[in-house]
Every structure is written in structure tokens, then in C-alpha cells.
Length: 127
Image (cartoon, rainbow, N blue to C red; front, top):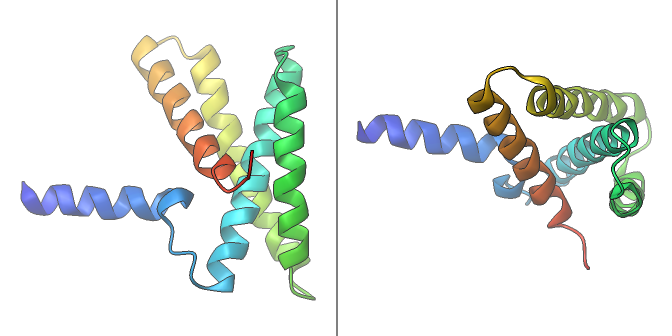
């Protein structure tokens, strides 16, 4: 049981940008690319659902994108865009499950997961 908890902790911390090892420029680049993708998905979902919070999300997204753009090394733009696109699709999937899942437990899980990912991304920003 103890080894299962350790394995679960390692998996969850590795998958969460908030717990990622940001000591290397590569890790920072990937983390900010993931955050840009997730915030893009959140913004698009808010527009689709006519959520009044989209202005705040748009500002947060722009801040992350500005940071990301300052970090991208020459010749790596396509790779970074692919990371953003993958993260955007993952976040969009969580948001769709949260909104449209027929299973309330699954919807609640997806809503919490989506919120956790966004919180870990917006934690990088100054208020």
C-alpha cells in the first residue's frame, strides 16, 4: 500500500505543472507552453458558454503567452506550438466532461482537475 501511494504521488506531481521541476530552461519552456494551451482552452470555453469571466482569463492567458514567447529558442516554435495544442486539447476535454458528462461524479472530477491545472498555471502570475 505504501509503495502504491508513493507511485501515485510521483505520477501526480510529475503531471502537475505546479510540482514540476522548473530548474531547467527546457522544463520551464514546456510548463509555460502547457499553461498557454490550457488557458487558451479555458478562454474558448468561456466564450462558448458566455461566461462573464473571459476578460480576466484573456489577460492571464496573454501574460503566460508573453512569458512563453520570450523563452522560445530559435527553431523550436513548431515543437512549442505542438505542446500548446496538446495541452489545449487536454484541458478542453476536461472542460467538456465537466459540463456535459452524464455521470455527476465524473463531471465533478473533471471540473476539479481542470480547475487545479488552471490554478497551477495562474500561480506563476503576479496579481
